[in-house]
Length: 192
Image (cartoon, rainbow, N blue to C red; front, side, top):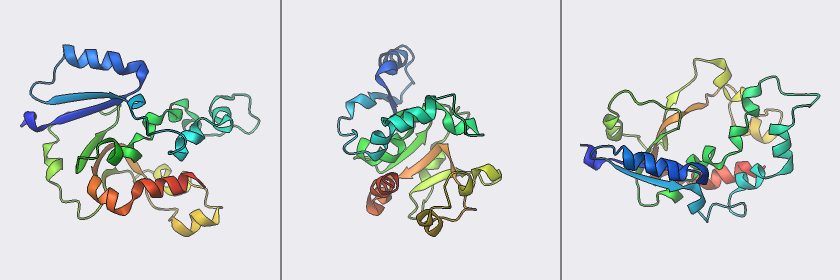
């Protein structure tokens, strides 16, 4: 039932006009497309979002762009400047971006859909906030690769062998998200 599907595309001001024109020229059949620019979200600013404050800091810019470091990270994947974009952090603001929605199927910009995903909407999430693709088969997806366990607060609250999740495709229960105040939890960890 494509007429029941709404695709919300959120992009930046650089790509907004091109995205809108592409979907006007290539309509998705009976489904609806809504293209929004992250710049429309005036509430999403450095005074509200700790990550926006961090993304604009000189130390963060230096970390991502300074190439003549003596102690350069061995894994350059984590120094990719694409992580400086707020678009990479929008998933933590979905309940605020879409306040009337109960569930969202989040597809990242590099996902290729090869079959019907409608069945995902029928999954009982049993009070869980995020239904995601497991990535535990690779050791580099464990928390000990992402988090600094020498910090006592991290060591106390996280299992180093726990798995990260693949960001590319997620089913989010926004009602449960709001109940558990996940955006606030995200902010508290960003402020450390």
